[in-house]
Length: 178
Image (cartoon, rainbow, N blue to C red):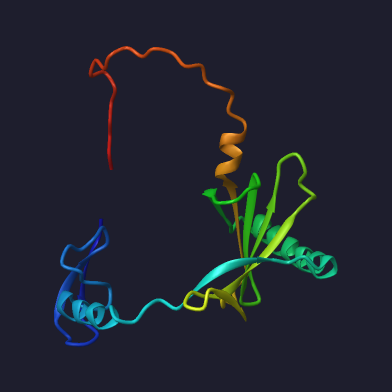
């Protein structure tokens, strides 16, 4: 928990911003009064676009991109500058997320068949017209790598748990809700 004394970008009022949450709606840029005015003004404008993954199926293009992404992964692992994300949504066991040349790529593969990789890229989806556009979803130009395990990998290997009668709660279980 950190507290910052900031000055509102609009009205220039000094206020305290808390990193763990602010009940009155203030943000890191605006005091609560100005942030509320911004939120109210934007309520009538719907969100129009979002990123979605589009699979790259052209085998020649796919191999070329995978080779470039492998270089990013090797460099990140060599310099120990990558994130391990515990759980990501995928039908495969593993999912690697890369940013490269202003695009975000996803490489998905199973533990048993690591060379059988699915490659996808984030593209722009028009929410109002319910279709993808011809544009890529713009990302940072900095090259990054993240490795993650999917929910699928956790549940796939669970053995069938037998049904059994449970004893009544006795107050011995420690519950800590952060």
